[in-house]
Image (cartoon, rainbow, N blue to C red; front, side):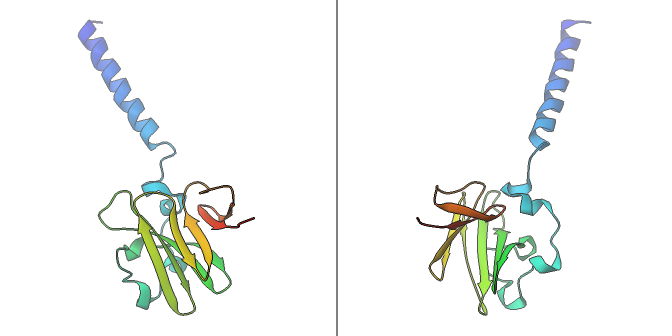
Length: 135
């Protein structure tokens, strides 16, 4: 085997290993919730589907708390832009951010969408959704 052949084989091996490492454990756009297909319960009602800055086909229901529903969504055209939407009492409020966590306050309750707790006083209600529980 020549040095050139060995170099090509090593380059190919490196390229394949890079792809495997890059794909393993990788979740589309940051959260596991986006790795599943959108189902009917993930969609917002027609009145809220056009929430500014949100791709309606990306909404995913992440938690329900009584009459309140919490959704994760993506912002169009931005590879790292997440949104947190809350629907309840006939209204939808939301916010988007380019990094985790995405914070939102509803009726005095502070919630965050993210891959880890924003601080020690935060409790994970469901995967990637945190509620501030001051001590």
